[in-house]
Image (tube, rainbow, N blue to C red; front, side, top):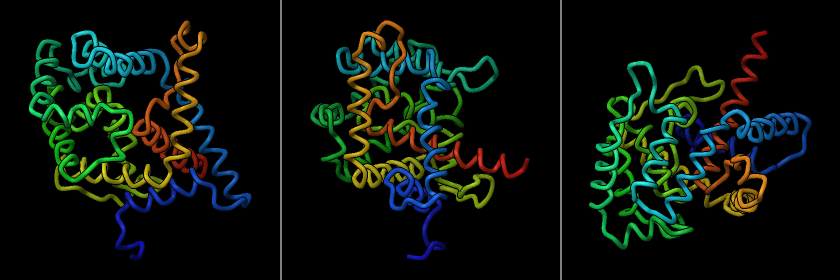
Length: 269
């Protein structure tokens, strides 16, 4: 398949793979890798405070109090920190009573055995096409936000904190830009027909990337789990963001897009 036949998403994933899994030691590569690593390590500081604190607490509640009020309250809080409730007209979350009712109603439509599979430590290892269809339907139908325009973003961010080892957060600033455009992310746009198609392509792309890079990504998760259990992390509420394989994939995309945007800015100075 030639570059012209590949989607922007596939091409960007190949470049991300080269950065994440070193294949050469040229000066050019080392410079790119240094910028990439710096952006990856800067996330706790840049997205700190409630963004990380409530993210970690929501995931903790997902394991111990699945879909109970305490769990969904933490999800509601982290969505505010992640930009899903603004003082401007949009985006706006639904009132909490409607929010939790919508989530429970949608998830209770899924077979109990499938829910348990989705909640497991390593659900991506046994994922099948039927599971993917269920996930895509969830992402494209869950309405936790008052605006239709932000459905895929608010739904994926919500579901990530319900099934953290399975569903990745998706946003316009990084994830969708990574799917639709080539660096420097200001041209060569590619369109998807609807939210369901976009969600399906993103999820399948994530699964392919993780299957190739699972050992290295799992190491980041293991390091985060150890750090997040330390007294320093618990006392200060300063947690590591690499909380699951889907979140590591999200973090890598953020670092990749930020790195290229910085390069573009520098070239214009």
